[in-house]
Length: 87
Image (tube, rainbow, N blue to C red):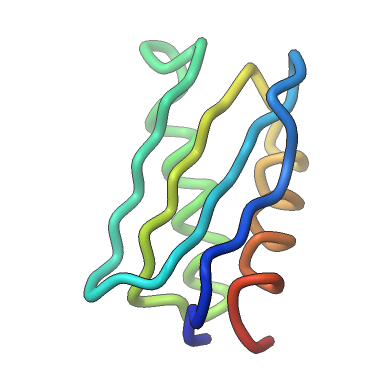
């Protein structure tokens, strides 16, 4: 999947997250989280799994997390990807 434009999904409410996806020359994942020390690796693994499933190899993915669960991370990222590219 090619990322052709910048797109966002989500909110900054408690237990949610905001995901922004935009075109880039390489894959770059940036995570800010209220639970970064405890869960950054798990959040990153979930993001990488969704990106791999959609064959995304070049994008800047910025995540601002407020304690979202796995299903919310996947849903928000998939929505941003669909808005940013062609599925």
